[in-house]
Length: 119
Image (tube, rainbow, N blue to C red; front, side, top):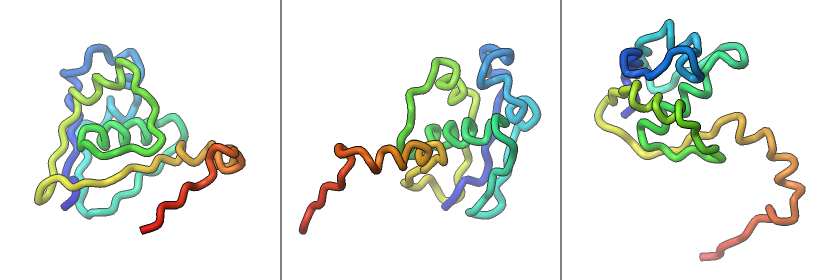
């Protein structure tokens, strides 16, 4: 139960001159085959790793922690992306490293004190 392939369909893009359609990863990679349940995306900052992962998570209906609203072009990337699952989709959550950038400040905030629920 994992993603087998993510396919990017550039013909469905409204404009390849604007973000995120101008990202090199989308222009040069039409499909990513996932041969195992665990895959690492490695690359320099600004290459489109997080953009692609967020788009894949949204396309799969996976909850994204600390997600920000998408701009209009980011929403359109979902139309240009198709996902193929092995044995059907699964529930899950996505934690981006961006979520943890503000964590030290959040932890010091009096509003962020944990709430305990006892069962």
